[in-house]
Image 1 (cartoon, rainbow, N blue to C red):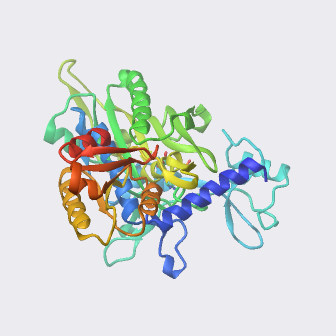
Image 2 (tube, rainbow, N blue to C red; image 1 turned 30 degrees about the horizontal axis):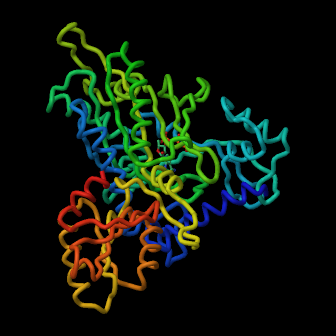
Image 3 (cartoon, rainbow, N blue to C red; image 1 turned 180 degrees about the vertical axis):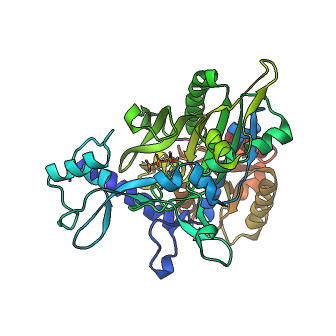
Length: 463
Ligand code: ATP
C-alpha cells in the first residue's frame, strides 16, 4: 500500500471511530452484530443531518416561488415501479463465485483491475473478466455476469400473492411524478415549476461499503423540475450552479468537488443528459450527486400505464403537452460523509495535538457550549446556567452546558464535535466586567465579550 493510501484509509478509520465515540453514527443493530448496509444516527448525527436537510429545504423550496414540497408514502402501488422501468431494469451487474456462491459487482471487480467499464454491456463485462483472468476475492472461478434487481420486495396486506407485491422505494422521484397531477390541480402552477422531497430510499446493494457512502437504506433529497420541452438546457445549467451553491452552504470542500458529464452509452434508460457531481472521499473520487435531464420519460410512462392524463395545457400557446423534467438528486448520507471529511482536521494547539471538526456553523450539531470556569464555585455555576438558558432560548440550534473536567479538556471535547464557540463564565464576569470569554474553535483565540452584546455577537458569527 502506498503511503498516501494508508493515510487516506486511516483518516476514514479515524472518522468512523470519532463518529461512533462522539454519538454521530453507530452501526445498525450493533448489539446483534449489525445488519450490513445499515447505520443509525445518534444525537449529534441526527442534528447534523437535520441541519443539512434544513439548508437544502431552504435553498430549494422556501427561498423559491416555483417549488412545491412533498412527502409521499414509501410503499407504492407495484405498477409505479413497472411503469418507471425499475421492475425490469433497476439492476446491478453481478458475478457469482462458483465455489462460495458469494456475489460481487462485476463492474467493481473490473474497475479494481484497472478496466474502464464505461459503456460495457453484460457480455462485454463477462468477456473482459475472462480475458483478464479475474477471479473472485477468494481466488475462485466466476460465473458470467447477470443482472440483479436491487429493489426490496414485500407484500402489503394479509395475502402473499402476486397482487399484493410492493417494493420499498429505491428513489423518492416516483412519488413526485405520480403526484404531478395533484399539484397541478391544487395550485395551478405555470411552467417551469418543480416538486421537491426529502425521504428514505432502499436499495439491496450487493456490496454496501465505505461507511455511509453505499448503504441499503439511505435518504435522498430530490427535485423534479418541469419545463417546456424546448427549454430544458438553460434550466439544466442553472441547476449545475445551484448544486455547487448547496455544496458551499453545507461546507463541503469546493476543491474536492468536480463535475463528470456521463457518456451517452452510460446514461440511465430515462436520461438524455446527466452530470454527476463527484467528491474526493478518503477512499477515492466517487459520486456525490446526480443531475439528470429525464425528458418526458416518467410522466409519459405513468400516463400510458395508469391512463391518467399527466399533460399540461399552455394557456398562451393553446397547446397541450407532457412537460420535460430536470432532476437534481442529492444523497443525504453522502452529504454527511462529504461534510465530515471536509471538516476533519488534525493540528497542534498550545503545544498539544488536537482533532477537530471545522464545520461551517450552519451545519454544526452544537452551536455554542457554555462553561463555568470552576465546577465547585456555586456563584460561577449559577451565572453560567443563567447564560446557558438565555442562549438556549435565543440561539437557533443546540446549546450545551458542560462543567466536567478542566477548561482545556472541555475545549477539546467541543472541538472534536465541531462546536464553533465556547463561552466561559469566570470570577471577573461576576465581580468586575460582566463579560465572558468567547473562544473560537478554529483559531483557539479568546475574546472578552460583554453579556449585553453576547447574543448579537454569536448570532452574527453563526449565520
Ligand atoms: P451509485 O452509482 O453510486 O450506485 P447511483 O448513480 O445509482 O449511485 P442515483 O440513482 O443517481 O445513484 O441516486 C441519487 C443519489 O442518491 C446519489 O447521487 C447518491 O447521493 C444517493 N445514493 C444512491 N445510492 C446510494 C446508496 N446505496 N447509499 C447511499 N446513498 C446513495
